Length: 293
Length: 288
Image (cartoon, rainbow over all chains, first blue to last red; front, side, top):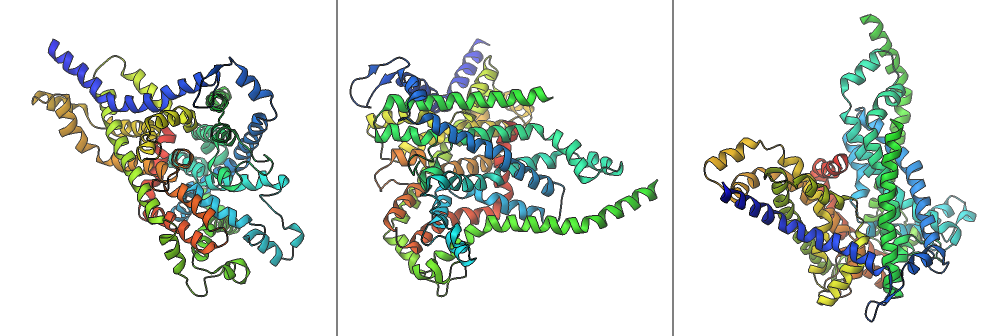
């Protein structure tokens, strides 16, 4: 009996070892280390000077760091994502989920952009937005709308929206797929019963389908908001935060602090703030959904 | 009553026809919005600058310039980037599969006190952003002198897909009846043999889902690859394409060709396995 316990304990330990080593070594320990670095002034090589919370104070007050502006931009993206991207996804999911003809091909096409590398998508949109030869300006010229032509990514006024459009477009399919899976999970009998009782398609969606896929909508909202806070790839490829910092988001600030300015303490403070914000928003959104029930 | 229902249905379906057409028009427009960039990428990868810049904006190429592919392939270093991406993704997938299968076995099938808490601990990984560890991992890799290597990407990629791997494995492993373990125990198998001989062969369906999920994470990842790799010998496709576009700022054809080379393997796999690929995205989100 005793020997069996030892074998069992040893087995638990050995089976968990690879996963724990990876997980603690690359996720958990580094987070703690980041938190530690964030209290210091450090150029990554030499001595570390303890600053207490000074990095965080600077983060929230200094215009030169520009974190608040970057956070503001990420919040705009989050709002656009929740109020434009998700409704579009939900609409598509509801239509495809009720089993129309061509359901599967449409689904596969709409999901496709999610699979394409963000760098590829970014490069394509760079070419669409190119002021001299880009598709967008050429199309406007051909339509006789020359006065609408624009240096889309180079102008402070249009850059932010120009960067957000492909970001939102790329992930419509992702949220649609999640919601579609939910819609398909609604029992056909329930739907049929409601139809027999004379409910219109709209009423079926409003009173049966949407309430029953609420947990998935919650997940989508959480992903949309935290994804916006973390967004990096497309912005890095399209503008890298420019022109004149018009399109900065927290992660572009973080990378600049780390690798252009060698301010490892400040970069870590941004990383820590991003983790805190992601968790805080995820919790808040879960709360909000719970309260509604 | 039955008649009434039938009547009602007929009315609604005839009303639907106008609505239906409208709906399909919107669905088709949205499909074109999603297909167009890929079509455009493919066509401009085969054109000359002259065509791309005005003479033939969106039509099929006049004469198909496959030489663009030759330049992307030869001078653009694409084969190397491609191979690097394959090595990094394959190794990360292997690591995730091994580590998550073993961990899931310990969590779901061995009896011990903290299994629930351990699972919850791993599930934290689903929400931790990849940014969280970039500074310390960068510094550790630098101090170890392995910044420019495949390892510097393989381990982080595996770590960040691990939580999802465990989640997917759990879904499959709880479906395997416990009787099977007991039978194996009675036959004298210990936990190790039971795992290797009985459980692993039954987990094959989970492998595809985990592999697809991990593959997509690795193949497209930019931030770590960009920060950890500066030597073009080890660049993966996303970083390589960035470098290539800096190199060919004035010639669009070869860049287009590079984009196609990076994208088409994925799209071809998607055509054959779209169901499986979509499933691997849904599994995690719906349970998580």
